[in-house]
Length: 355
Image 1 (cartoon, rainbow, N blue to C red):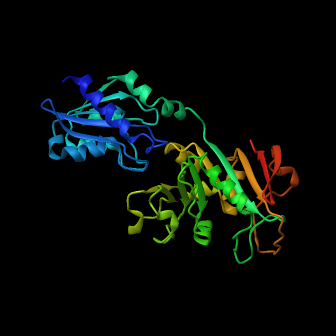
Image 2: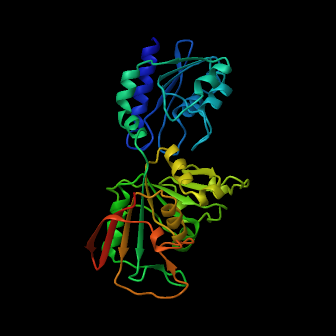
Image 3: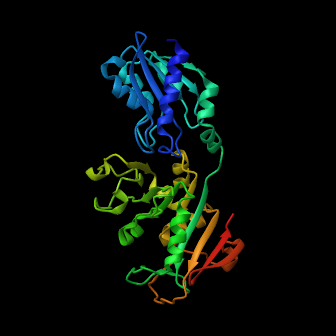
C-alpha cells in the first residue's frame, strides 16, 4: 500500500465518529510501521481523546519510528485535552502526514519539526475537506450568545430564600427544553448550579443535547451533581489559580477549562472566547443574575429570551433577573431592539436583539 491508501483508511475511520463528535470535526488516524498498520484511532465523541491519541494507544510500543497519517492537523495547545503534538513526539513517531491544516491550530508543524519529525501536508486534501466541510464553514462563523431567563411579573428569578420552582408554566419549560437543542452549549454559574441542580438537557431522546457548561471558579460542585452525569459532556470553567482538582472531576466526559477568572468577571467575552476555541459557537446562558449581568454589560449578548409569569414575588432581597452594579443613569441602559412578545401557556415570552 502507498501513502494515499493509508490516508484513505484514516478517512474511513473518521466517519465512525459521525453524529457523536459535534461540534468537533470528524478525524481519523493510522500509524504505519514497515508497511504495516500497527495502530488505528478516531475521534469518538466530544470531549474524548483525539484520533491521534487513540491510534498511539492502539499502536503502543510499535509507534516508535513509525509514520502517522491523520486527516486533520494535530493540535498544539491545551484545550479539552493536552496537545497531540506532545504525545506524537513522546511516542517517537518519525513522520507525520496530515490532509488539511486546522485554522484553530498554530505551531504544530514547527513543534514536530523541531523534534526531528518530518511533516507532510495535503495528502487526500480534497476528500478530507468534503468530510468536514460543515466544520470548516463553522470555524469562520462568529459566536452567538443568547440569554434565557424565567421571571415573575416584578422581575424576580427566585424568592429571598432562593426558591424558583416553578416560576413559569410547563409549556414554557418545554419550550426551553426544545430551544436548547438549537445551541452548542448551555451555561450556568455556580450558584444556579448549586441551588437548582439542573440537568440542562433537552429532556428528549429525539433532540440533540447541548454541551453543558458551568462556571465553577473554586470547583465547589459536589460529585452528586446532575451536571456530572457524564452521559452528556460537561465543561467546567474554573480559576486557573486553583491547583487542586477534585478526583470526581477527572473522569471521562468532564472537561476542565481554566481561565483568568478575574479577567472574565470584568469582561464575559473571556468566557465566550474560551468556548469559541472549544468549537462552541452558539451559547445559551441560563443564569444566574450575576452571570447574566456580566454577559449583558460586557456587550457579549446577541439576543434575549425572557419568560414572564403572571406572578408577583416581591422582596427587597429576592433575586432580580439582572444583577451586578447596574447603570447609574437610564440613558446608560442597554437598548433592546426588534422586541417581540408572544404567549406561551400562561406566560409571556419577550424576545429582542441586544446587538
